[in-house]
Image 1 (tube, helix red, strand yellow):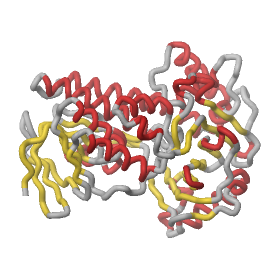
Image 2 (cartoon, helix red, strand yellow):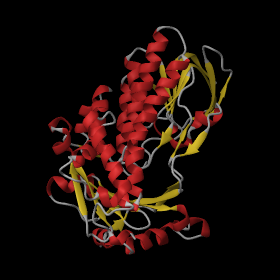
Image 3 (tube, one colour):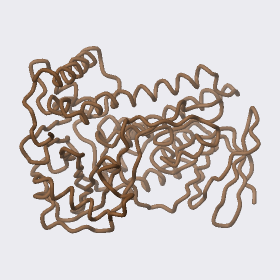
Image 4 (spheres, one colour):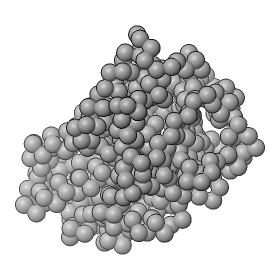
Length: 423
């Protein structure tokens, strides 16, 4: 079976990056097909959005739908130690103004469905339960995709491909891009949805809570309807999954070692079996070729700690659409400079988070993170980065540089009070 005529753009993956790119391209008059291997709605992790992502959702035209979807508003984030001795809260409104006062905590099955339906409404042709298997017959002007759909084999011709396939990273391996880890040690995340988890009061009800302990950290993300996403991130060597230990045993052992998390989960009930994912911090050497652009997790994934995944997926998708529209309207492929520029810009966004993530995982760095100097106004600069500002101004860049310098000094000279539970 063959679908004709040739498509302007074939998007592999119908998650946030694929749906956002599709909506933008369709609005620009391009013939777009989205190929999604699963049936929506489907479970996905990564429920916490950032205020700077609101601008992207407005740009693709889905913000009003999101506002009316019943998701829980997120006004900030909080970090604490597993023993409950330290707490640091960041409020988006204080650091970013009323225009970016909040975002949302979303159940991804519903959020992703909303975005994909929006892409349909903009004119995208969407095929669910359709797996893209190979890229064949590449020429200077088009490519052929071989797919497996519900009704058998499908052949699709397209001028452009956007890879939004998530961490399965369909095209990167197919076209020979080099993939490397961005973390020194491998980690595993074990997570699930619970009901009956303790929540903060007032506007802080929607805060994501990050609880740091000696071996790793927990996330607690409150969702609408009384659900809470809870996960623990551990070094793979400490998790012991390969030795045959069950996810429930590993998860419960981590909970039992954390007073703060154990208290919040007291009496809570899990709503489905726990899941796990590992080795998630990596990226490809480049994110674009003359006719293929990688977006979101298909290009690389920094770390889940600061909830940047969905925003970076949307941001790279909108940028990829811009590059394609500009080149397509001039009836050409991307130039080598454009391929380099796209990779450099997306990599720059990732690096904004990579630096502060290294401080978070470092014991000395976390001690400084939990005691930032108000005199230097460092908390505001950190708060804006946590809100998704990947283009900090000069003063924010300077303050963050000072913060990283202090984190390094903390290893040798005590600049901030020690946190004994991390030792």
